[in-house]
Image 1 (cartoon, rainbow, N blue to C red):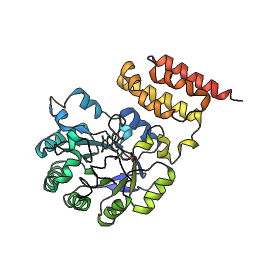
Image 2: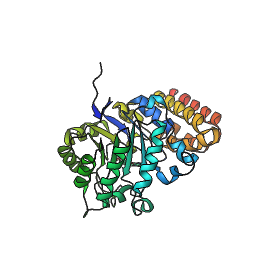
Image 3: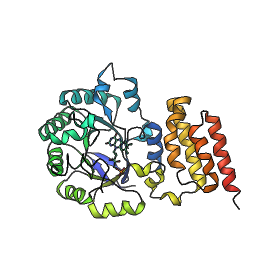
Image 4: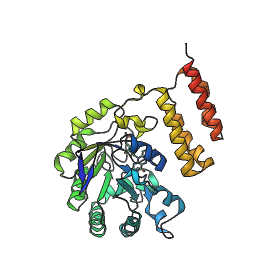
Length: 325
Ligand SMILES: Cc1cc2nc3c(=O)[nH]c(=O)nc-3n(C[C@H](O)[C@H](O)[C@H](O)COP(=O)(O)O)c2cc1C
């Protein structure tokens, strides 16, 4: 029988690569694809607890972000907010929707979120972090986890304090993006900091930041000893990295087949118009390094308005690449 790679509290996790939560990308269609290819867990994109507070389970848009399929399990609902009471109330309510884990976003750097004290803004309030996690762990029946950055800025890197607070108050896993809030995406992710956290925590630590290739996966694992690797930007256009395959090793036929499957899931989930529009950003990445002779199909693919036209374009890519001299 397959051995779990690690446990989140009592929940066994099989595999050590995880699709990172990404607003606008890690929706049900894409998570399903990534989970099937090898993502060990399925994190929703972050959802604002304020948006989840209205009505029975929040606005339609917020509820849609929490839709999942059974075969995605373990499914992690990631939420964010600045008010401890509200986060706890919402977490208790959305637990009813059946997630396996609730994760608190403590890493978002976007000004209007972080400066209000949510996302990475939480890193500036260690006492609130302690209170929030303690209350969530007491009230919920499922594990509570957090995804953090290294601190607010270079002069306030309090990741070790925060990581210890998380563990001491009952969090079952800590995912770490190795940058500060003020770095956003600048500079290089600091894997030393991830290694440092891993050395001092006994709950699983997930390393994240600047993993782009299979070689990077191996490097971050051996460098930090993290329990799993979370990959974000490099999965877009290359979900096969979750199978430990670099983009250049994926055949065009496999790519086109996956584009079709992904589009179908998008159309089913969002409907014909929205499904196609939301698919464009993925297509742009899938075909980023397409062969020269099909480059002229890029704009038509990114602008076509009917799924059937899209199919035809994919068909012509297939034809053109198979008639290469
Ligand atoms: C478009 C986009 C949206 C993101 N949305 C989220 C989010 O909803 N929740 C979260 O914790 N992190 C979010 N992130 C951060 C990623 O999860 C990840 O920490 C970051 O991209 C670094 O990993 P990478 O170098 O593998 O991309 C987002 C990143 C991107 C690029």
